[in-house]
Amino acid sequence: MQARLIHLITSSLPTGSSINDAIATALDISYDAAHRRTSGKSKLSLEESVQLASYFNCSLDVLKEDGLNNIVAMRKTQQIKTPADLEDYFNTSSISVASLTSLKDVTLYYSAKDIPIFHTLAGNLLTRFKIYVWLRLLSSSEKRISFEAYKIPLSVIEAAKKLGNLYTGIPKTEIWDTTTFNSTLKQILFYYQAGMLTPETASSLCKHLSDLLQNIATDVNDKNGDLSIYHNELLLMNNTVLIDTPHKKAFYVPFTFLSYFETSDVQTCDQAHAYITEQLQQSKFLNTAGEREQHIFFKKIQDKIDALAQLISASDTLGFE
Image (cartoon, rainbow, N blue to C red):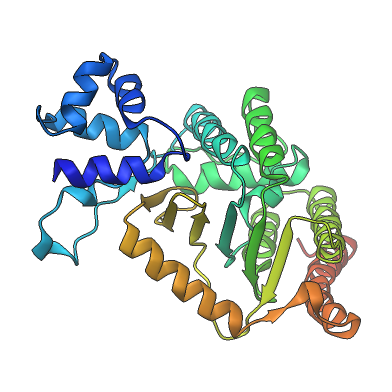
């Protein structure tokens, strides 16, 4: 089992790197002590194994018995209940994403049931609204308070914006449907009808969504851009994420709005990659689709945004709300 872990760490290192130096750094031990562990002369303790797995972001599945191939160890991301938790989540995610930006040939695959989070982290009104929704839905202790009166610490906004900026430049392959904006539209409608969004703010949020959609449509037509969008009408997206690098893969499965189960298990990640590749082959690649296909796709989403904006405007004018 120790040999499996050492082998996995070795395969994750850049070409030419010393496994002994890497182990020595991770465990804060001497080169000789590291060599004894990599050669098998000294046994890794359970604590050291966990420490190495955490340091190199490796799955502890390498430690399981051969007969347990259907069992996958997963790491759960932190629970979010408060603005401080959310800020910590953004900062931790920024560290993880920053490590990816330094790698070559990295690709992020996203099965977009909802608008991918990094598209909403510009630090604007839409960012503030999404934070408001997340915190209210993730914590039952949140008091009834309108969005306009809800005070979000500036540090949370800045942490969110930093994370959003880091995603720029990372090649992203996303699978969408015309329903990808639906949940955000429903959130705006719900809080507006609940009296927790003013008509002006609700209308402004619709404008932000229109601007976001237009920016994404522009990115799709940028031949040198980092965003690829595929349209699949049949696939039931679930916001899963796969990060593929030359040295390893990581697969993320959501269990709340922001929290994920994460695994680097080689077999699981390879199966997920094969599944995503199959879905991409059965999807329409919008980046190379004709103007007509692109127009139809984005117009269907824009029509939903316009319908909500008109509903809000009519309700406000007629005084029904």
